[in-house]
Image 1: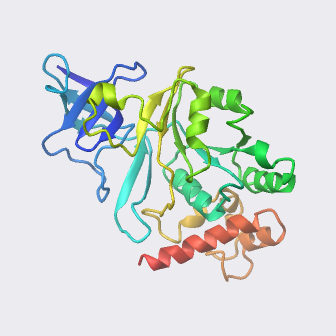
Image 2: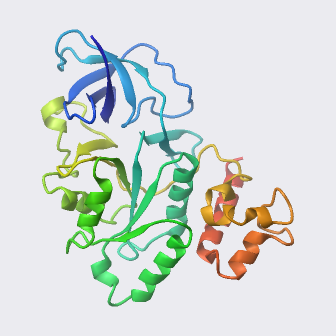
Image 3: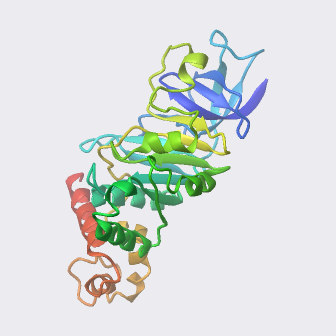
Length: 312
């Protein structure tokens, strides 16, 4: 028998598949040479990939399905494996939405880190929702920080949703935004990502791996990325807390194209191409000076240019 299913868990050489939107898990392995158009990634198959498989009888640990082909991806999210590595790692594929969770304090937000994720989402055509978590902890004492953050990213064209996993604020709205979609949840360590997922669906506990033991019998259960079904509809791909996010396959001349607020004015620059750093009559620099483009985002852009030089 041959069929098509989605990878919902990658556990080394073993996988779990399901024929989404149905949630019917079964094990699979990757055998033979599965050729991919893309190269250089440390993982040939990612969570969210749609695959063609073969199966004789009923899938089991003793007789898993065999993945024969990875179907073309609608989109995917990729990052450099480490800050000093040329290798890349595909985080997930075929995403309807990336939910980037941040906190302003505890831990303190690093805007360049967030901007690298946002640029990567723009490059690979992944829609983004920014979730500002833990607002109950600092809204009263630091309201100006909340306003400043919203101004930076809403003026760039992103939606910012304020939430609190502790009080439940914003959770119903987030649940509706995730309904019937494949959602990647990501963010730095400590921002409350697992708490948000559990608030969306109290039956889930990503920290302990809800589907590992039953379907893989405790074998090869270590997984960086895993998909869960939300009781209210839709799916969540959980990721570990990230500490770095290196850009992949992006020339320095292209970086500004993936800042939506820069792209909107770049045609007005005197020189084409323009690096938006030293050229006279640069529309981007003029917009920064006028406050139409945030200085924080522009500084992130300059940092990416500098990072690009380090890897060449």
